[in-house]
Amino acid sequence: MPLTAPVLDDPGVTAGVGRTALLVAHARALEARRPDALAVDAFAEHFVRADPGCADWPLNPDEIAPGDPLWGRLAAYFALRTRVLDAHLLTAVRAGVRQVVLLGAGLDSRAHRLPWPPGTTVWELDRPEVLAFKQRVLDELEAVPTACRRTVPVDLRGPWPQALTDAGLDPRQPVAWLAEGLFLYLPADAELRVAGELDELSAPGSTLAYEVKVGMEVAKVRANPVYTAARTRIGVDLLSLFAPGPRPDTAAHLGALGWATTVRTPFDHAAGLPRAPRPERDDALAANRWVTCVKGR
Image (cartoon, rainbow, N blue to C red; front, top):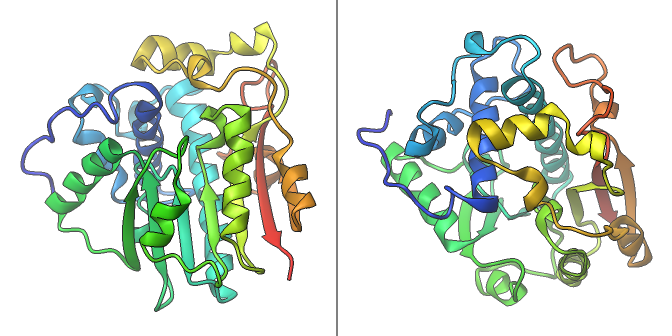
């Protein structure tokens, strides 16, 4: 069902980190229109159209010039990430996990578009403004989730575990955690704190997937067209949003807590997928890592 009127501008998604939620939704919207889509999110286009600040963002892949760093390469990166993390979550629930937690959920529509087994609950944690914008769009669409969906309005830089358990999470049962676009924007100490807190809520058999950047990017990488195009064309300064300073080794931290961790680059997942991004010179994606973890029994 199309939106009958635009949703009013909302500070939760029109500036800062919240704006990146629209950037990712736009990438998913573009991908959904491709015949060879890496992932299909039928809700993403509605989120983008609901914000007046995205009115000039192209939604037809035919409008994208070959080699476009923003709507081409970065969008393909987000599409690949969506595909890989969808598969990670579905593998967890096929193994019997029935609790799924999306940390920094943004405009993620997995609670509505993935084929969850009966009895699955999906919790979405994000700032109240982001969840409110998202809910208004979903309500306009009369969208029905494919799992029991529970939203938890919190700022993950502050206390959040109590709010999650108050919303029904059972720490005695395994959890499939996802932090798709969270740790990049958290200070190092907050990243480690969130990892420790989710560990305390995780029974054996729990899983976790998250994205990080490793190392400090040099000046040539920071001048990559992916970053400059996002800043100059849509006003999203990713470099200013990334948490400054050295990043922690959260995978090692989780390993010490009993999690088996696997660290891969996005390019490791690109084999056999013609439109998936490949490495390039002074690459803005080279420092990105996708980490998957399983808590031991």
